[in-house]
Length: 464
Ligand code: GDG
Figure 1 (cartoon, rainbow, N blue to C red):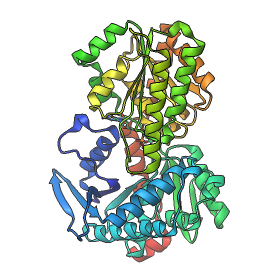
Figure 2: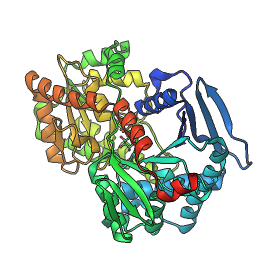
Figure 3: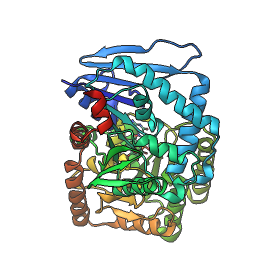
Figure 4: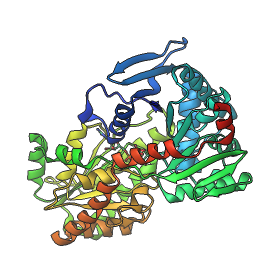
């Protein structure tokens, strides 16, 4: 039986701590447990020596991880992945800093990783590659003569041509992507953008509804909206709040608004803080009666744009609290810390409003986690950016434009005042989708498709 080989930039540190791992890591682990196989990725270490792969075995899964040299980390991870692709794919061309040598380094790391993986892979293994760090990975494998089925899932948006055209290696990137047998996107808009971009740089023939031929290769392109694990989230959320938080909750005697995001400029945090300020200005009846918790653990702290946004938020939080706080009341708690997953889910359940307003987001799992954490008899209200992939499914959320601070403030007021029957009916509609399109559905549909999509003729010929 063919094994599954998952390749992602980082390997999740699982080792038995299932309850603290995020849904995506659990979803991938479960796929690996089903088929047996290997998870291959960076171990987070930097070393100038060519160290052997670090390997360990957990049941039927091998974890194989590599270290990076400082120059590889800089060019592949910091610069090309996180200062070119991430901002561009989130429509922030103003933050892109492109240098040809970073792109070369990015491709070389992909090639080196493919070379290290090759001896560990059997010809009938199925490879599932994750995310924007590894766009060229299949092309690197093909160069080595690997004919395995290789699928790719992009967790972030794929931009339209106005943006993608600005990337100097756009043609190379598209051609390399065509080396995958199956490409999965979060949303139909991403899928269409990929096909549009491809059609602009080369001749594309549509072979089937979702199968295309370009550059003499054929690739199937489908949408797989990623989901969460609603049962396990509900279990985590149902436990009691730790005493200190419960005390804080009881003391306020009002309603809580919660946001949880990696500290990232794509998540729209400054705009959200301003919308909250507009709420306090335009709807003074809420002053003293609500509190907004923003949890935002630091992420990619060695990229300048992430340091900038951190400073901006600290200033904004101080300014808003300075303006509106009283001796008895502080409106905004900004917590630049990482919390245990089980605690986060409990916090979600105790907050009347989930405020999720990214400027762009492939999906946004927090939106789904917030809903899945709620008490069905007394659920909170989700306010969701229409620019998150999740907005395609969670149409019963209060959908907002995150750039419109008056609109978001009005949605906050509506959410804070929403009657129970409306909250329940919106919650039920969203839970139906979250339950149907859960993480198990996501991984199973992707992997079943990957096993079944036609492979390329040239590869089939080589394999026979
Ligand atoms: C990328 C795409 C896509 C956050 N703070 C803490 C914490 N988290 C967890 C959340 C959630 C995850 O991190 C964040 O997932 P998101 O989907 O919201 O966003 P990205 O990290 O940008 O993820 C995104 C996703 O990939 C999956 O395809 O949805 O669009 O950008 O699970 O709960 N977890 C813990 N402590 C924290 O302080 N334990």
